[in-house]
Amino acid sequence: MENALLNILNLQPELHGEFFAAAKLPDDVTVREFDTVAKLLRQLKQSREGRGSIVVILPKRAYDPRKVRRIRLASLDSPLYIVARTCSEKDYLAYLTIGARAVLQPPFDRGDVQHVLNGRENGAIPFPRSAEVVREGQARLDFLMPSMLTRILGVNRLVAFLADEFGFPAEDSRVNLPLVMDEALTNAILHGNKQREDRKVHVRIYISVHRFFVQVEDEGEGFDPALAGDPKAGENVYRRSGRGIYLMREIMDRVEFKNGGRLVELEKRNPLNGGA
Image (cartoon, rainbow, N blue to C red; front, side, top):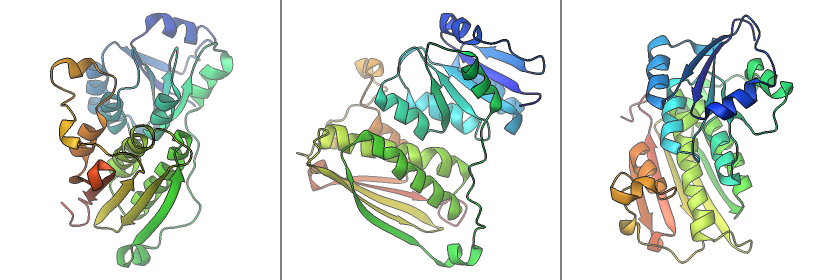
């Protein structure tokens, strides 16, 4: 990638040196480093470089959906890469859901650095959108999925594609809706079905130009959503879990639990088509 601008959130200096020691950066690459999320966000919002910019995050701790979401929303057209010492399967899938091009882990080599500099590929589907069909139509999907975290990415890709086709803004189609689906499906698989292979997750999706509506239902014992604590309060701030329901309610226009907590309904109105 010529004249690339590399924005690096460097929260692990030792790992940063290890990664970039694998290859010398070309002279036409401009590097800017930030030691806090706030500084990176400020720069991204001020400059709005767009496609010529690449964002690299070296996280200090495990995946934080709120922080990564904020960075992604500020750099929707920028390839995003994660460089991490360790990464669980759940965190890895969550990074991909939010739009990361790759999660790179040691040992590093020259190909890893070049992968970052190459930027993203064009993955667009080569069929034009039919404005009439989209404006007048709607899509309904009803399917069962196994209790496997690796299956979530396929559902998220489908949701992102449909939201884009039906004219939802980029921040919703690329970030918000896939992120909410990731949280809902992960909760259903891990906490509801306990990853038992004999249990399924039932997903029902309805989408039009006006709204996105989904039901995610597991086959577990259920729970009381009123008992979910505020992740911004007290000791909950330091917990690695418990933020999913909060995120759903922060992003979606309506979140409702039914059937003893086994079923969650999520609704998002399209602000670009009279849904606000």
